[in-house]
Length: 77
Image (tube, rainbow, N blue to C red):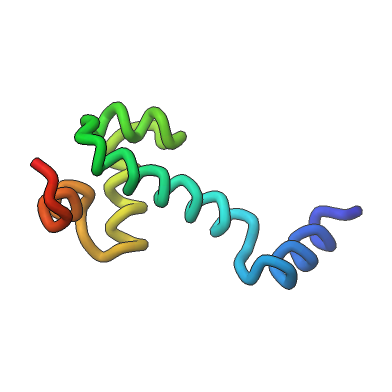
């Protein structure tokens, strides 16, 4: 199967592109780890981001708040 055909079939079946799906999984995992009171640096590493800046940028783009603010809003430190 060609990459283009895979992309089209995946998007039709799942409802989002492969890249968006991977990002969704990574950010959902990051939200869970925020509740576990891990540092942003450790969360970034565990979720596949090169650094906490990249994690924060993706988090804000998706959820509209920083990881730190999200943690505060949901009963964290």
